[in-house]
Amino acid sequence: MTEEEIRSIKKEISGCTRCVLSENRTNTVPGEGNSDAEIVIIGEAPGKNEDESGRPFVGKAGDVLTETLDKAGLKREDIFITNVVKCRPPENRDPRKKEVKKCRSYLERQLKEIDPSIIVPLGNSALKTVLDETKISEKRGEIFEKNGRKYMPTYHPAATIYNRKLRPQLVKDLEKIVEISEGGS
Ligand code: SF4
Figure 1 (spheres, rainbow, N blue to C red):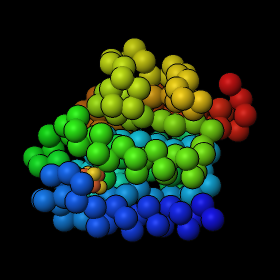
Figure 2 (figure 1 turned 90 degrees about the vertical axis):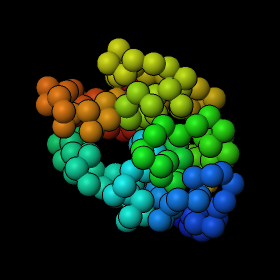
Figure 3 (figure 1 turned 120 degrees about the vertical axis):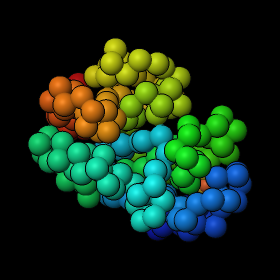
Figure 4 (figure 1 turned 30 degrees about the horizontal axis):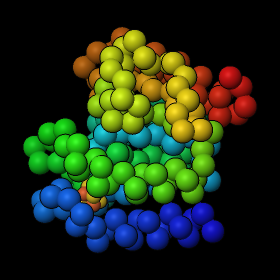
């Protein structure tokens, strides 16, 4: 049932024109992965590679995500990976408040269906949009409870391309996330 609903949300997103981001997109990027996942990873918005492929976290940042997940003992297909907005903002600008608001129900419905143990916003923008918090360097690794859901933010994989020192910390956070998803705290 969940898988069917996730597919139906994906189909709705593919025809969505609720906000201006529909005007310049090549593909919608609804998210992908296990519809029964214990972990949902949320980025801010699709970039160029994602827009071209219709898949979240591809390209260099996607490679880092796959590599760090692997080090933490996870495969991409074990989890669900998505973004706050499902269409690429022009020139990779941050999505605007009203775009986030219009797109929000898709993410909410995905989370309701998947019902994960833990949700992981990646990087400052997703931290701000999802939890209304700032400073990922201070908030990473912290557990937040909001509307009955558990969250743990961590670095965006792209940040660890520019600053390699952050990568072991990203792996450490992902290991902790795995532990929580398996019932640890
Ligand atoms: S970003 Fe979201 S609300 Fe806007 S057109 Fe795309 S799917 Fe629809």
